[in-house]
Amino acid sequence: MKRVAIFPGSFDPFTNGHFDIVNKGLKLFDEVVIAIGHNTNKQRYFPVEDMIAKIGEAFNDNEHIKIVAYSELTVSLARKHNAKFLLRGLRNTTDFEYENSIAQVTKYLDNDLESVFLITSPQYAAINSTIIREVHRYGGKVDDLLPYKL
Picture 1 (cartoon, helix red, strand yellow):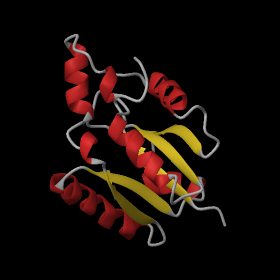
Picture 2 (tube, one colour):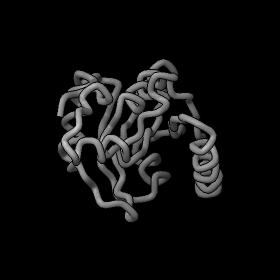
Picture 3 (cartoon, helix red, strand yellow):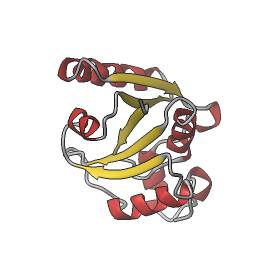
C-alpha cells in the first residue's frame, strides 16, 4: 500500500523550511501532497496559483509530489488522497504547542490519520512566512529564503 502524507499549510510563501520538511518527508513516504489551504483568518499576499507554480518549479515536477489547493477540512482532503499521515514541521516549542493542539483535534475527527512531526534543519528554524512577506513587501531581498525565485 502506498504511504501518502498530506503537508498542509497556507504556504504564503513556501519557504526553504517547508522545502526541507518535504524533502525529509520524501524519505518516509511514497508521496507527499503539498496542500495549500484557505485560512479564513488570513488574507493571502502571494496568489495560490503562483505558489502552486513556484512549488512545482522547486521540486522539478517530482512524481512523488502533488500540489493542490483546498478549502475544506484537512481530514476530508486526506481521505480524498487516501493519505494516512499529516506531515508537519516544527521549528521550536511554540510550533509544537500549536501543532499538538491541531493533532489532537485531527485525531478526534479521524482516528486513522496520524500526525508526523519533523524538526526543521537548524539553518531554517528562524525562517517564517510572515517575516518573508514583510521583507518582500518593503522591497527587501528574500530569494535566499525561498527554494525558487520570485
